Length: 237
Image (cartoon, rainbow, N blue to C red; front, side, top):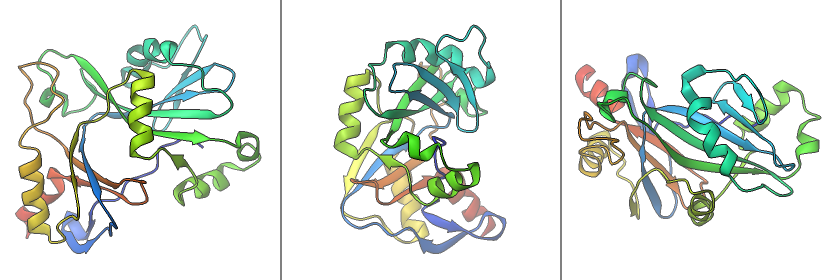
């Protein structure tokens, strides 16, 4: 129900990682944010004031548990954060964060040379009819989620939520009228926007960023633009 949906690459992936000319269509202004290379984490805030922590795939800890699943260091890093979040009220609210640094991923050294841990909020969803969702099977929920059933905050609402929760957002890089459509021009935009990461945790960090997430203001369209994809494409072309 609360698993974060997959984000498409901006240019479609072809055989052996080669990029295709086909790209995601955006209408209206496009917000560009840094894509942080960490582990997708979620704080599920329940209407009764309890919460559950999870990775993208698993639920790891519930408020009051004596023992939590230590996977990826999510519980250790975010339990104190979740304890301080305000009561969610009538709805179930899920805050999605990227946990990075430490030993979280192979790219952690790009953000820290001292094994520091950081996190950034990148999305928030609101679930208004929980009882109806609990009547669905796992397969029905997966289909509902994968077809856009979850409701996410728009950009202004997300900025307000970050203030209310005391959580920093992933860096906002720019708002553009349109994205380039060719593979070459998109790669140039990527290099121009992110010569190095904006979320380094210390001066000894390597500094390489994973890439950009592009989205419309309302989040009707969203896609990821990663250095890895465009560099691999250029090597195999």
